[in-house]
Image 1 (cartoon, rainbow, N blue to C red):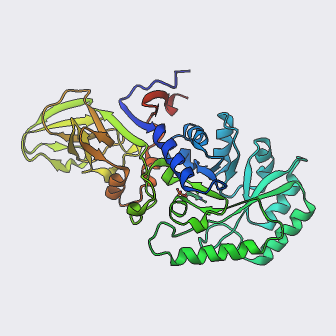
Image 2 (image 1 turned 135 degrees about the horizontal axis):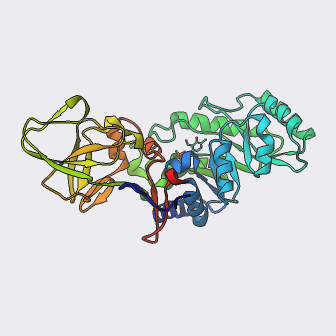
Image 3 (image 1 turned 135 degrees about the vertical axis):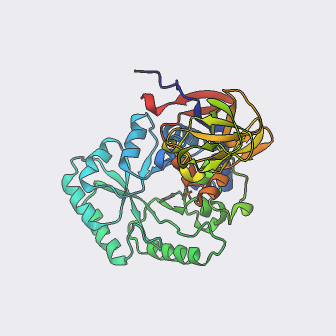
Length: 386
Ligand SMILES: Cc1ncc(COP(=O)(O)O)c(C=O)c1O
C-alpha cells in the first residue's frame, strides 16, 4: 500500500487545527460550566476530516461527538475515538447490535422502533438513547404527548434502553427575527414537562443558538459550523460574541503556462475568448474535486493578486488568467490568504449562491487534506491511497 501521507498532484486543502481548538475553547468559555459541548463532526467534519477534528475538539473541551449516520460513528470508533458519540439521524432497528458493539448512542423517536429493536437486541447491558422531539423543524421527532407516554411505557419494562438524553433542533436560530425560534423553545419546554423519566442530557442549540441564545443552552449544545470558524449565517455575522477562526483553505499550483493571442479561445464550449494577448495558467483542480462549474469566473490568488478562472471548469482542471508570465509551480490560493488578499468560504458560497456549510463539504475526498497544529504540518491524509 502506498503511504497515505503522500500525494502526487499539486492540489490540496489545509486544515488549521489551532483554529478549531480556539473556536472550541472560546465556545466553552462562552457557556456556563455545566453545559456540555458536543462537537458535530458529521459529513467528515463538514469536509475537514472527522478523526482530526474530533481529536482536537475533545482536547479543547468537547465531551461528546455527534454524527449523522451509524457508518460515520463506526468509522470514528475504528479510528480509535473513544468519546461518547451520538448518531443524530435515523438508524435502522435491525442495526441495534452494531450500535451496541461500538458503544454508540442512538437517536430514537418512534415506539415501533423500540419494539422492533428490543426483539433484536442481544445485549444485556443498556444502550444509550436520546429522544428527538420535533418542535417545528418538521424533520425527525416526536410531536405528541401520547408518543412520549407510549415510549416511557416501553422504557419501564425494557431496562436495556437507557434514556440518557432528549433534544430538538431549531429551524431559524441563525435569523435575526427570533419569533419562530421562541415558539420552538416554548414548545420544547412544554414537551420536556411531559416526561416522567427525566433524561440527564437536554440539548437544543446548534452553533447559532449556542452563540446567541443563552436561554436555550440547557445542559448541552451541538457545535458544528462555528467550530470550523464559519458564521452560521451572514445575518448574524456581526453580532457574534467572539471571533470565529476559519480553519479550511484550498491550494493548487500552476502546471502549465502559455501566452495566447487576442481572440484565442479557452476550454470546453470555447466560451472564453481573450481580449488581448494574455498569459493563461492551468490548475490541476476541477469539478470532480468539488470545484464545480458554477465557479467559472471566481477569483483565485496568485503572487498576491486576485485573478479570475476563465472558460469552463473541466473535470480535473481549470484555467486562470495570469497577471503576467509566471513559472510553472507557482502556488495558487483558491480559499484562504495569500499576501494581502483573502478569499473566504463565504466568498465562494456567494458565487455558488449557497451557504458556507456546503463549500467544504463539496471539496471531494480526491483532494488531500494537510493538517497543521501549532503552525507545523502534523499529518497529511490522502484518501485516494488508503
Ligand atoms: C441535529 C443537528 N444538530 C446540530 C447541528 C449543527 O449545526 P451547526 O452546524 O449550525 O452548528 C446540525 C447540523 O446541521 C444538526 O443537523
